[in-house]
Length: 271
Image 1 (cartoon, rainbow, N blue to C red):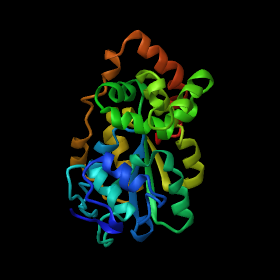
Image 2 (cartoon, helix red, strand yellow; image 1 turned 30 degrees about the horizontal axis):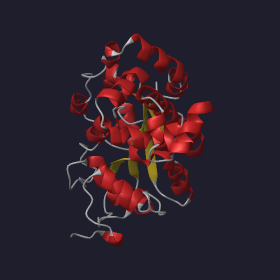
Image 3 (tube, rainbow, N blue to C red; image 1 turned 90 degrees about the vertical axis):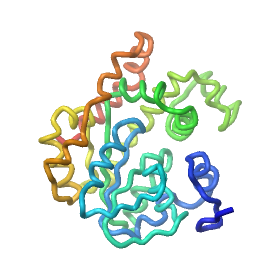
Image 4 (cartoon, rainbow, N blue to C red; image 1 turned 135 degrees about the horizontal axis):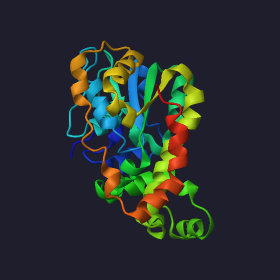
């Protein structure tokens, strides 16, 4: 058995991370304050955050910290202090996994952490489609518990509470789970933007894909990184038409539960 820092066993999956790190009382961004001028990329899962993080990490100014098969899990383990890692040099970490712990961004800033946060928003039709059809149940259920369940009310809320945290998702249909998860996660931007001020940049994924030659240099400038035209090759729109595969019923629920949040969030995005 391999033990990591803090006595936890070797972690190679998000399920293990949830049991051994997230479930504990310590902050998930425990070590963020040790790094210099860090770039963080977050937003709702399935919103293009992985793509943007990898494009940014092509910059030679940034340290290649990866050691496993999942870049974001590597980042999560490093920031939580679950694995040893040298803090020298600049880093860019994807932190969508924080979910309900998003208050740690502002708390870390108040404690003197030196970071910039890029928050990605994306149209809910593409995101919800991906949550439903391109993501494992564990990820959706964890996101729902952390960000979506709080938006339940009435009988659905009572059923959720009666079943309890680990089984409560069974009281809510998968489509509604995905919609509420999107809305809850995307709405975090309304608290984060005033709390972080100039240390936060909101990026609309769809706008970035459509106008990458103009918007991507602005993202790099915010991150304090030198831009090269070749970086735009990593921004592609291969998945922008997912919404066309949704049924009329699915589109209607997404419109009702998600679109109002998205329209407010995208209004904050860099133009």
